[in-house]
Length: 239
Image (cartoon, rainbow, N blue to C red):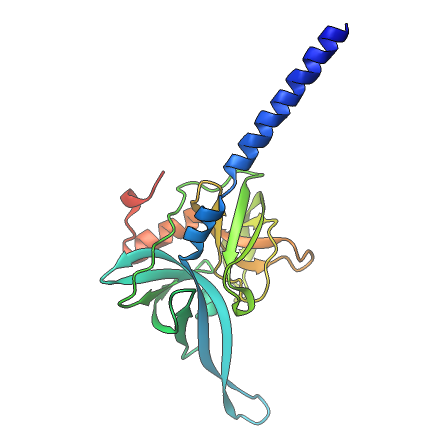
């Protein structure tokens, strides 16, 4: 009996050790996180606002996050949120650890999802590849962002059940997924990345009831819109 008990205990410990090693191996390594973070940028937006009482027009500034998705025409295409680009006359500039205040221009925004694309001329930023499929329930994910303008902020969590549609701040319906990674102001446009390094979504909001629950546009919605809008090369995307 003692021999069998010892054998079972040893086998259980071995299984737990293997499971722990597999779990650790499945998370993004510091080196991979560093590589991915170089594809993420802070987007500074300068626009104007009109005081409703005095009708005085004043400059306004805010920050968001974006990330490289494609190199084209000697520059880089960035993905961010539509609500970042909604002002009438926005002026965009981007920064990260190796890029300082490079101008960017708006290419297009989606009519039914909180996503848009910017173009940064003459700058090549390595793109983050997309996943072809939406993440299943319970998938471990990492969010890379620049909340309040701080580079390289990393949070992680898991995916919850997909939401068929959610109302965005513009009153539009957008297909979305819940994730348990906390975000902060300026995180809008952050990529949601699986442990294999593929992007499965883009953050655009937090849950109004639970601060640690965030909402992202899923990768399938993003890919279909990109392909239709800017002829995104589907065949070059990893499966």
